[in-house]
Length: 201
Image (tube, rainbow, N blue to C red; front, side, top):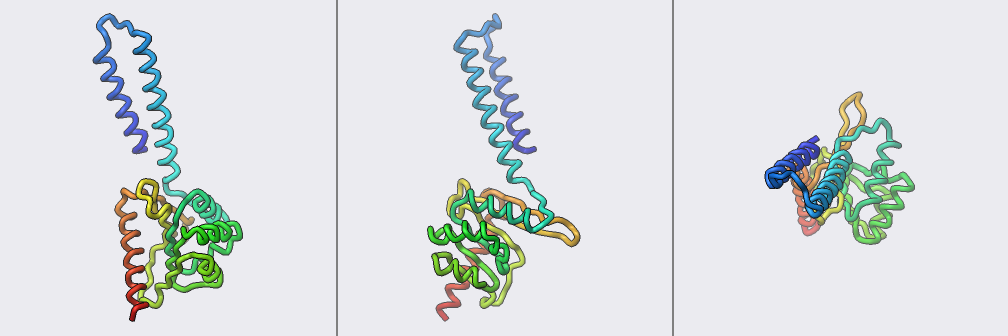
């Protein structure tokens, strides 16, 4: 909705400027008509892309594990480096998802922050994934999230999953300008620093 209002406001400003500068005779030259058409096309394409992106990032509802896994697969398939905070990452048992994660691990694009490792996570660690177990640090984050395209501020976002009792599971995507995104990065950095210090002692 915000994107639609922004583009409507921009279009209204442009239309107002156009009519202000329009010749008194009201006649438009071929160049003016061509320019107007070009501006409309550029605005239209940009507006459609912006609106589609906003709809993609809107909170989504998933009623079963199959739907959640389909979302995770699509997200991982179309992303670069990922940093994932989870309790045990049980969802990676899905063969399609594990194959994607294995590829990311081999390219050095995967970090897991988990309460306790599993055989699947250990296997990913062997092929290049960074696995941090935070249970030894004496605390357990309640939030479960994935930072997508980590390290690329322009395209990075955080996907946060949550579920209330007797309600469907929801996932919300927040871009790098959102305060929650910054808090997720701060949590990851804190866990990494605490883990490094723990290893030194």
